[in-house]
Length: 122
Image 1 (cartoon, rainbow, N blue to C red):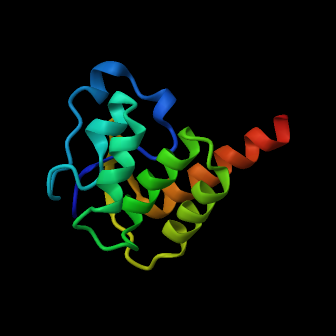
Image 2 (image 1 turned 45 degrees about the vertical axis):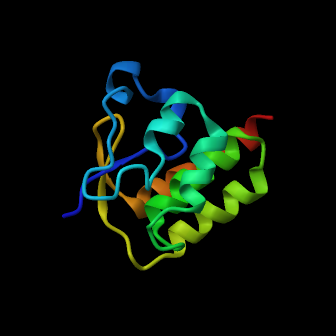
């Protein structure tokens, strides 16, 4: 089982104490832009994710890239990234920054569902 921190779209729900300790275990440091996302440094996070040593279709990379897009007002790009993450056949169990173990498939589903729920409320 491969473990690492992933932010997904639940950034606002992450406790500060947990997020301050975020690392990308099992991946090159910075490849998931966890620290930059945690700081709200969206430009740096996007740069790290775009130049990541991870494959372009890695679901964890796509989930975090979608979170960056959503936080920077690029809803369409966020949805595209999360849909691509969901469509991947390379899913794994990951530990979120909040300490929850979940599959990347479920994280992508949750990100999409969170957006759709927000749309219904508006």
